[in-house]
Image (cartoon, rainbow, N blue to C red; front, side, top):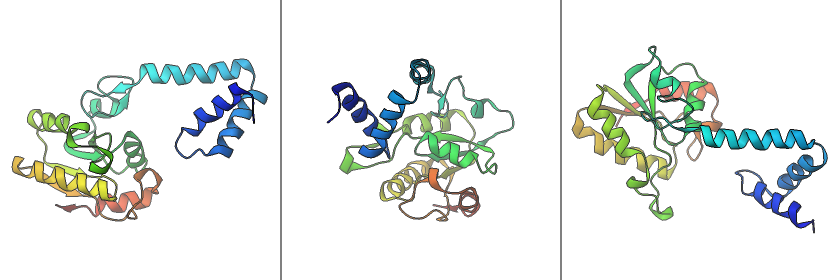
Amino acid sequence: MHAVPIEVLIEKFEQLPGIGRKSAERIAFYLLDSMSRQEVQEMADSILHAKSSISLCPVCQNLTDVAPCHICSSPKRDRSLICVVENPKDVAAIEKTNEFHGVYHVLHGALSPMDGISPEDLKINELLLRLSTEPVSEIIMATNPTVSGTATAVYLSKLLQPMGVKVTRIAHGIPVGGDLEYADEVTLIKALEGRQEM
């Protein structure tokens, strides 16, 4: 239907989450028809720069350009309170509330045997290492209220309880099957306030 380079570009955009064929075509034609070569080059350069300069924080496993990240290195944060989330975008969602003053741990996924995701595929060992080196009083499980998110929270709570740390779960102010990144700030605040021990 289109020239081969255009078709390849459309297919690449279709691989992005939430982008279907029509949206991919619109983006491709906007880049080719409405943006200058310099603007396209700047966009490509910014993507490559972000990809090459961003790494995982050695403490919390969040995406960062410094080590440790700004949250982990902040003296205003309560390091005895760790909020465990599935993905870096969940950290951003909770940070928007301005209500949580602890630190985070990013698992980079959730347990899902059907998809071949086991505990070894997540950043669980890094969390256990933190607990052996830092005094932690509470761990908040802020995984998504999905089957895999709940399974991950239950698995971690059973793993952590023998260590004598209090394990809580955020309240279900977030709809079941939803993702933290789409929740509004008020819902996230209520979910954090209503957390319960597991």
